[in-house]
Picture 1 (cartoon, one colour):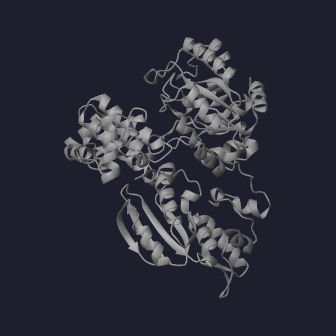
Picture 2 (cartoon, helix red, strand yellow):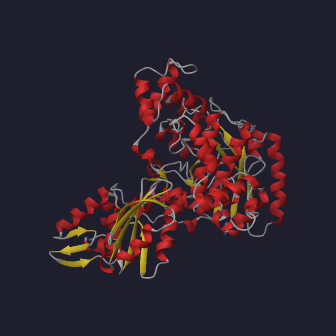
Picture 3 (cartoon, rainbow, N blue to C red):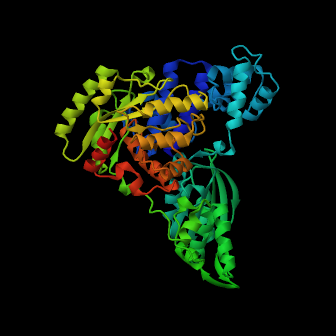
Length: 573
């Protein structure tokens, strides 16, 4: 039982209780528990033993929630959730996935109009049925149609970070099987896509039927779709489909290349092979009937005259031309990161104290971090006012006096008001080591106004970083619409860096924006926006996103040692 599965059931419970109109504290307890479980570094299933007291050591997990975690781990389900599902209007949870539709509106749409799906919502909105409902109106109907128009097929995919919990667990399970010599996750997951539709797992094993039998016996399997000696397919309890393909040693590299994709990249490489009289498929590279490559992925590329191309670049976006002309980027790696520049503590909405965040970062080998709690505009998350930041600065100074290997920078994540002014006084901003600015409200401003709002903020002399620049939430909400080139050019002109936020639900900037920004001369920072010590592990997702944007070590500010990073900050000011 993966942490992600326990968290999924708790989130569904919170959503259904919210639709039901249950006590807000009860809803919040389930939602907080979901996040605590999901971000926990070890499987919570390993804590289920004895009287469950180890579970109760997790933040916010009391005896009742600990008992429910144990029930999920032992039975794969939650009786209380089944009861709430029975009473809830069908389809209401799905409707809440649409921005602007909260629990009350979802209950009305499902209960009054009988809407059971997003497709049904679209039909009702186009027919003008929603505007007549109490609390909606024509403007709400237009906004719903606009949100639905912005949805893509990709939004039905799941977060790569969530898929990793399931996929990497299956991978470990298969690698432990006698006879398995290699096993990898391929597909869009390996290419670092921010979401995945399903997972492809490749295994090298002489006894294909035996490893296939083991695969379909994985404890989380809900349904077996196919079961053979060379391929199998299952659906997990979470709804995630995983496909297995078994290959022999001489074809494993070719299979890994083929099933990693993307389709467009593979077609382009196949054309190169055809010009050389070669045929490429998942079993190898062939000249006529003779296999000339396939055991290793590198050999497949070499056969068509290319160096190995990192999976993150395989989207047919110029990587083949770059490879042919020795122009592939030397992509940034997780080991290059020297510090994490955005995180939150218990002084604001974080779940770790300054000391706990610093201790974890130091154990991870970082040389520096920045604590960037929210400002006063974010009242709902206990944002600090000017006096609060001054008090925190003194606490950070005392903490730095105790630390031996890590330096903690005093920072803030400051909201940009709709008119472009900032949420803290200039005196407070001047006293901070690093200042992030961000959009958290009024993301629906017209592009011209939104652009002017951002441009005014970026010209402020104390601003260092533009945090999660669009404010999007993957599968949740569209980001702010701005003239991106103008924003990037202003950032470059004023020495402001652009953030790649590694939170799996953000990953903002996205990969194409990263590449565009770097092309315009921008410097980026990759950080976790962590709200607990465990979330500092999210850095891997941000690095992968930057790699998809062709980012090199030189493009990322927090790959620098502290002294060089501080010079960069001082130069911008």
